Amino acid sequence: MTCAEHQNWLIDSLTGASSPLDATAAAHAATCNDCRASAEELQASWDTFRELPPLEPPLALKERTREAILKLMTEERAHESQRSWQETLQVPLAVASGLLVAGATLALLSGLIWAGALPRGHLFFCAAIFTGLLVGAFSWIYSATTVQGVHLDVAARVGILALAITVAATTACPELHVLAWWDRSAFGQALTQLLGGGGSSLAFGFMYGLFPGFLAALFGGRLLAERPLANGLVAVAVVFLLATPVIYLQSAPFTSGVIATWLVGTAVGTLCGVFGALRVRRRVAFAPALG
Amino acid sequence: MSDVTPDEILMAAYQAGNEAAFAELFERHAGRVYGFLVRRLGDRALAEDVYQETFLKLHRARNTYDSRRPFRAWLFGIVHHLLTDTLRRRRRMPATTSVEDVIERRGDDRSPERIVAAREETAVLQRAMGALSSDEATVLILARFEGLSYDDIATILGRSAAATRQLAYRALKRVRAEMTTSGCKEES
Image 1 (tube, helix red, strand yellow):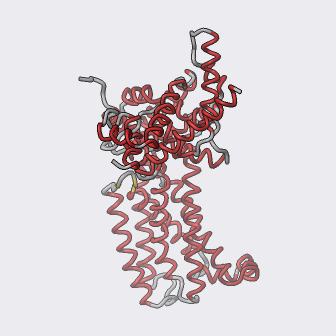
Image 2 (cartoon, rainbow over the protein chains, first blue to last red):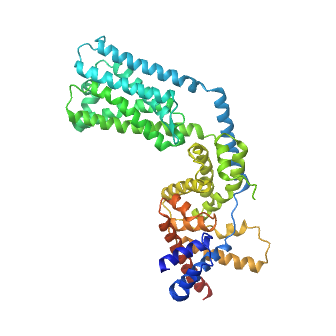
C-alpha cells in the first residue's frame, strides 16, 4: 500500500466505508511514521465533532414550512381536478394561433395581402419552414412531450403563442417591412442617429423578441417553473426558432449586418422576455405560500 | 429486517401527490437540513430563510427526481445549490454557529462545570470550522453529521470522488491544526 492509498483508506475508514482493521493499512502504518501520525491526527479531529450537538429547527418554523407545502399540494390537487380556465384554454389558444399563422402565410402566398411585396421564393421557403415548425410544435403539444422535467409541449405552446403575437403585430403594422417602418419612425430615426443602423436594429430586435416572449410565457408558461433554467432556455429556443422565418420574410430590403443585429437583438429580447415572465409567474404563484 | 420505508419509495409517493409521504420525508430530514444550514451559514435567521426555500424548491422540483438516485444526495444537492447562491449573494464566507445559541438549544442536564467545558470545546471547534473553505466545510459536515458517502458528496459538489476525499482529508487536518493552536492559546 502506498501513502496515497493509505490516505484514501483512512478517509473511508472514518465514515465506515472501509474496515478500520485492514491488515494492509496496518502494515503500512507500522512502517510509515507520517501515515501513522496522520491517522492519529485525523481520528482525533473526527472524534472531536462529537462535541457538536444536534440542531433541530424551531417548532414554529417546522410547522410553517410543512403547512406551506401541504397547502401547495392541496391547491395543486384542486387545480388539477377543476382544470383551470388557463389550462382549458391553452390548447385551443395554441390551435387558434397556429391557424392564424397558417392563414397569414396562405394570404401572403396567394397575394391577398402585401401583394407583390416579397419575392415568391421567400414566400414558398417560409411557408415550408412554418409548416414544418408548426407540425413539430403541435406534435409536442398533443403528445404532452416531457423529457426529464423539461416540458417540450409547454415550450411549443409558448412558441406558437409568441409567433401568433408576432404575426398579428406585423400584419397590423402599416408596412410589411416592419424594420423599415421602424427606421422611418421618429424614435427609430433618433436611435439610428444615436447608435447607428446596427444599434437601431439591435434595439428593434430586442423589443421584437421581448414582448411576444414575455406575453407568451406569462400566459402559456405553466409548469416551466419546475426546472426554470432548462425549461426557460428551451422555450426561448422555440420562440426564437419560430420567429426567424418571419424575420427572414421581412429581411429582403436590408443588409446582412442589419439582419444579423436584428436576430441577435431578438434572441436577447426573447431571453429577457421569457425569463422575466417566469419570474413574474413565480412571484405570483409562491408569494402567498409562505405567508 | 428494517420495516422503515426507504426515502426513495416515499419520494415516489410524494411525486404522485401523497401528502403522508411528504410529511414523513419532511419529518426525517427537516432537522438534518436545518442543522447543516445553521452550521454552514452561522446565522440562524438566514438559515431559516434558506431552510424554507429548500423545501419549496424540493416541492417545485419533485418531478425531476429520479428514484434510482439516493434521495439524501438529491436533497442536499438542492440545499448546496441554495447555500452557494446565498453565500454568493451575501458575499460572506461561512461563519460559525453562535456558540451560545447551540448551547442554549441543547437542553443540557449536565453539571455547570461540564457545560462550561463543553461550551469552550464547542467554541474552539466552531472557530476551527470557520477556518475551512466553503467546500471543505460542506464535505466535512455532510460526511460527519449526515453520513453521506464521498460519492454522493462528490455528486452534490460537482467534483470527482477522489477530489472530495482529498477535501475531507485537508479539512480534517486543518481542523486539527486550528484546534491545537486554539487549545494552546487558551491554555496559555
